[in-house]
Length: 270
Image (cartoon, rainbow, N blue to C red; front, side):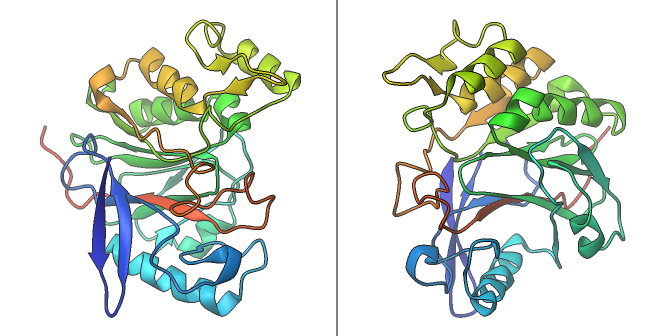
């Protein structure tokens, strides 16, 4: 992934973008840089859940929306599940926010969908032929539940996408270097993906095993039939990089939230 900088009115906002997402799909993964929040929330905290000043969060949100190039971004209430919610042209972001889902899908040009993260895996999917796109929030529970696979199935079914046309960008999240888990998580991972340990998604360490959410989600995309060349994994650990990312685990829950977003400007050809 490459970093680009959005030049706003009196501010600069860095974004990470993926080379596999086709042209015509404005998208990005935010970092913690480019905002107005202070202290543990410095500086582009987009979430109001954990104690930041609401006025500063609102200021950060205005900068973020400006960077997306949209009039507003649709976010659902994320519940660490596998529910996929479609967003239609004319839907109000406030109404989307009342829906419980961990993936949002749209085929409406100019409609921007997003997810919030602070260690969980943000995933963006696009199909240039149909113009369909999706934003996915995949923590370990959502990953085990198969939220990425469920979203790809929705794109192929309800949206008419061909599997070979799908492009998947897996953004920054807590990496296998830092994601230490208990035996119950390991058991859930192994139950959901029988090849997880053999493929390196479970890393044996003392005192407890670590899990690679990047590998697990990449395996979901590949098992669905997405070409390996069409899956981009950032491999950037939010817990390791204090200067660049917020991390819920590293900062013991007193931290900010980042976002990932995508929309499509023009539907592709036949």
